[in-house]
Length: 173
Image (tube, rainbow, N blue to C red):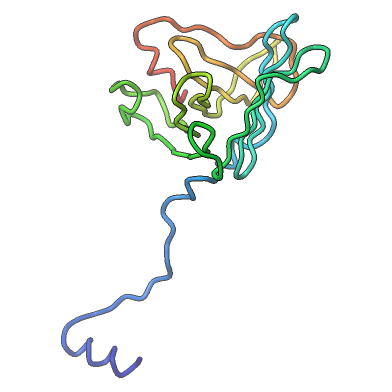
């Protein structure tokens, strides 16, 4: 090895040996910042929407006030179609959302065929709920409605509608 490096160096060719560098994370691994169990309060008669984000899986379902689960979906890399987990980070100003710049970076966790099968765009933010500041999971799926979920079960609807024409600028913020 040394003799071949000597020959290449004398010929004016230098070789730089670097360890393999991983630039992008595995497209089936969720970011650590999003992981955990997140609760979005849907109202006193509806209960909570639960999103459990694990390293290689995302589980979503609704849980009523009496404890019954509904709309259960399990997204993993081994699934096919719209339940296949595929993680993609979209950077600020990427124009991925309808050709318009977004306000910050966010994650797309799958590419469902319709809204019922899709995981919304997700990012971490902060929100004041009942007078306390919380670290929250913000998400956006359909026009104008932003979902807010926290690690704690908080009996207050924190999600909101933003119906101005610049709503894509609020994605990622």
